[in-house]
Image 1: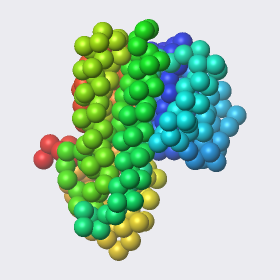
Image 2: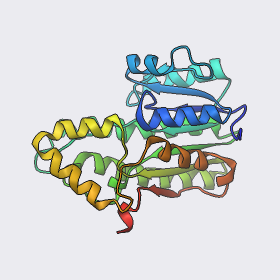
Image 3: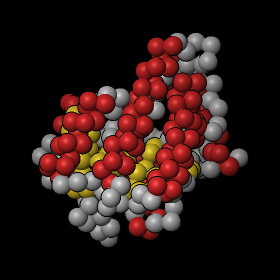
Length: 252
């Protein structure tokens, strides 16, 4: 299938993991993909010499960086049809030991980055139409003691997304905004989190696996495919929707 032929898709946090899988699937569906990431070396390693991609360095927490990226998208790709706000960082810590600097750093990327992305995406697509998919998390609705900052930021993303979806609909903008809520996924981000938890990592990981009815972590492409659905015309009547992809974790 080529559901996104002649479409331009911007994917943030696309140097690795879920973002990389999303970018590759969109490209396989015929899209011109603009993968962005603050990690320039990882971005180059993933896309150097590969046709169909326009990789850009991008700090999603910076308004100036968003201005630069959106200008480049207009000049190099001719516009925007889909935005996937995927960039995110983790912080392993309880409410008791999470500092204010930790909160600001996590919210700066995970929440403010999505806010800026929505603003940029709506401005670019409000005339011709398009779709925005924001990557939230099951941590938005299921409390995890070691993910106090991360879960709080993802919960804020969910509410922001619903609000923006209704605002666009009521304003008559043909821009749909939905969120996807991945469960624990086999990515470098999860590996980084476990590394930071140190001696707390083994019991944390064991409890997570025990709590997933399917008995394993998700593969990145298993998150990417539902993202493509939300962005496609097949989801034309979906806005303000939250799609949970977690192997049954939250159904228990």
